[in-house]
Amino acid sequence: MKVGIPRGLLFYRFYAFWTTYLKELGADLLVSPPTNKLIIQRGLTYGVDEICFPVKVFLGHCHYLKDKVDSLFIPRMVSFCKNEYNCPKILGLPDVVRNLFNIPQQKIIDDEINMRDRGFIGWRQGFVEIGKRFTSNYKKINRALQIAEDAHFQYRKKIASGFFPENFIDNRPILTSHQEKILLLGHSYLINDSYINMNILQKMNNMGYSIVTSDMIDEKEIRKALKKIPKPSFWTISNEVLGSALYSIDQKDPVIKGFVHLVSFECGPDSLVGELIERWLKREVDSIPYLRLEIDEHTGEAGLITRLEAFVDMMKWRTKTFESNLSSSCPSKCRFGGSLSSAGH
Image (cartoon, rainbow, N blue to C red):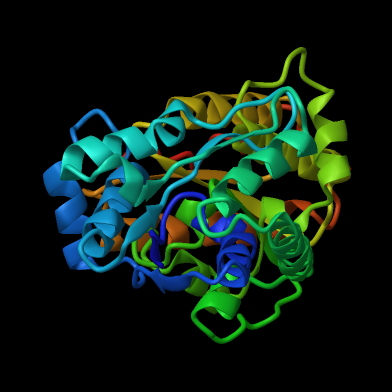
């Protein structure tokens, strides 16, 4: 069976698990190419205005694959963390794709993956159901699951050590290491799709900064930091972004010079998380510079570069002016948490 995997949304998070598992089951895989202008145009053609840009991009990838494979791999990822959910638009993806492109039910692998109530048991149960589409041999399914879990662990371990998915998926060169760093916050599909984010990783790296993401911060520390707020959100990825910011604020790591938050223009959870981060930063006397960049189909590269350059100037000014003797030279009203927050395009 030839199976197509759309290169979008949760692909960058579960790339190693999905591809390894399906290959071990005997599937012939076709991953859609990196996002390009044509894929975006197709996504915009079929996507309604109300959905966010990353979902439109995902639809473009599905359009590319739909006539080239026997089945599309779009599992219904309800939850991959206990007591939390994924975005409702991700939950409904199989139905959206099926109806938009008139794809028969049997041509979409859409089994439910739900860890909310049963934890890891729910995860394995969902993937066993996927495995049964390829073989009735439970021993083969369990072996494929074990190999995929090992591959996923190694993949996440590499990313935690400073690598990015593009280094494995597309063999792109590793970014230059710099002493000073920027914490890049956001969903993995915004951070790791270099076309829709206009290659922001390389741009910031060329400006003299290494990049840290939520995937590079210990999950236990993220969860511990979330206890600072009265109630975490219902969404796993939003909690990871918020927890990473709160942890970094608390650590006051001198090499972290600023936060850049990539958000999707029509994402409700992103708008809430961004507001919480800004409010938390404003409580700090020595508040780290924070830049919010909204991404959608209308975002221009020139505007993004201008904002990044201004943000870098702010970080350098702050370092030069305050870090040598902050306690005596900065009055309590000096706060920079929202000073370069960008809500436009």
